[in-house]
Image (tube, rainbow, N blue to C red):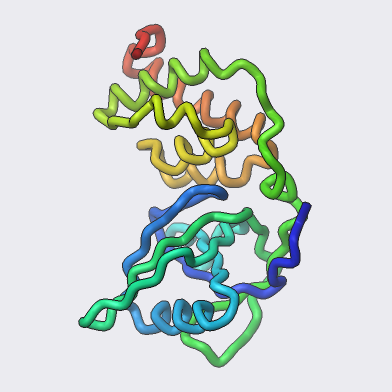
Length: 206
């Protein structure tokens, strides 16, 4: 169920950084416009949007993730360190003109209303997880899989999508996948593509 999240939100566009609902993103803020943004929202509702800039122009992808500041620290040199916890994805409708250094957009959450519910997709994930473990081992990435298994399926997929060594365009495609099943199928196809290319498809990792 969609809660009363703001229709107009400040946006932090950051190339190469895509995050998902129910994941955490630490940020080191030092640019004045984003220092202004963080100070403004910290004294208000602590909510901001992260979005991926399009390559080679000044526009953005239409889908980003709304997050809430859950940790806030100021350094002596003027930087601000925050932790942003993902809440739900949003779709940009249009930019709202303002007199601030940072951008604000009118957004809509309806397309991603399932982000607010617990993960109901409980299909067998064992074959997918074998591929995921192979893929991460191939790329030299270590995960605590026992701890990982304590997450629900939605958190598992969002976490893997966020940290997987795949392209930003592929991560954006995962961010835009509407349902959890869509996201799982998309991530499995991406991982299978890389594993097949490297000849790792049928290896098993414990």
